[in-house]
Image (cartoon, rainbow, N blue to C red; front, side):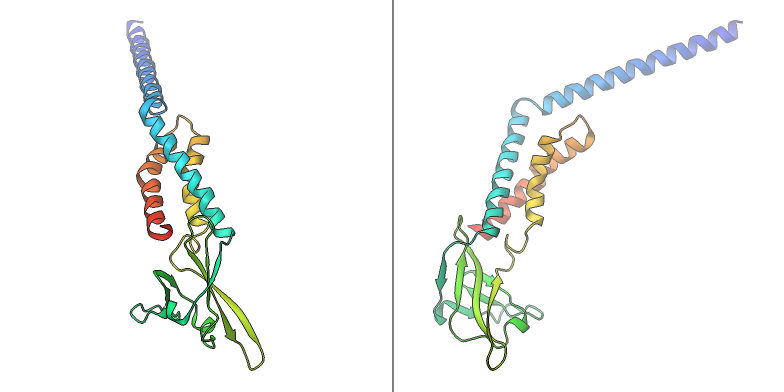
Length: 200
C-alpha cells in the first residue's frame, strides 16, 4: 500500500512539476512575443514592412510601365569587349548593360537605336534596334537591361513580399520570429543593395 502510495505521490509531484514548467515556458514565450511585437523592435519591423512594400509596388510599376524613349546616336552606345558573356553580346549605353543573344544581335542595323527609361526612377530599361531578318524583312528587337530589377522580376518582388506576409500572418510561432529577423537582416539590406546598384 505504501509503495503504491509513494508511486502515486511521485507521479503527482512529477506531473505538477511538468505543469509548472509548461506554464513558465508559456509565460516566457508570451512575454517574448509581446516584447517583439511592441515598442521599438515592432516599430522598426513595421518600418521595414512599409519600406519593402513600397519598393515592391514601385519596382512592379517600373517593370510593367515604360517611361520616355530616347533615340541614341552611334556615339552613345558601344560594344563592351572587356565583358565576355557566353552566347551574348554586351552592349553599354552609359552605365547600363544590355546583353542580347547573338541570334538577336547578328544582322542589327547600324543606326536607329533607342533606349526606354523606367517611369519612376528614370533608369535605363530597354534597348531597341532593328534587325535584318532576311532581304526584305526587318524586325524591331527590344532587349531588357541585364542585371537589373527588370530581369529579376518576380523573384525580387517575392523577396520584398516576405516582410508584409510576416506582418499579416504573424503568430506566436517560431517561423514568425525567423521571418521577422530574416526580413530585417537579409531582405532589407538586399533590397537596399539592389536599389542602389540598379535604380539609382
